[in-house]
Length: 130
Image 1 (cartoon, rainbow, N blue to C red):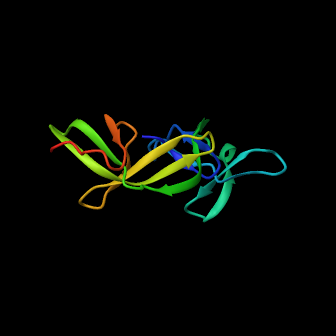
Image 2: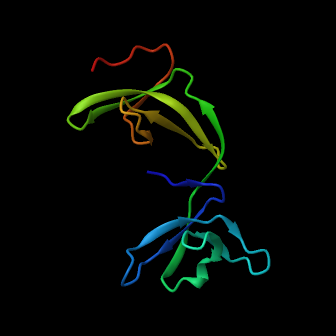
């Protein structure tokens, strides 16, 4: 699965003896030092990643610049959990590098990316029998 956030960067932490490794979205950059800032959920403030002893590194994420309606498109997996599956595209996330990622919603309301689908089916094309 791809990671999406507003800045296009994610901070990776290795974990400590009391906390497992984790990832946090970079929310902003310190204007004076250029250091990546993440939310400290306990204090409700932005903190530099360098304030955390278990900070490991930054990884590039996808920065969403737009979302477009699904427009009647579908995605199909030939073998999803042992059976074929076709789902409608809820919307398309458009990233800063121009990539369009289909987002689906299943019958239980779970929303997920469908970038690993076997086939993307345009509107009007016959859907596979499932």
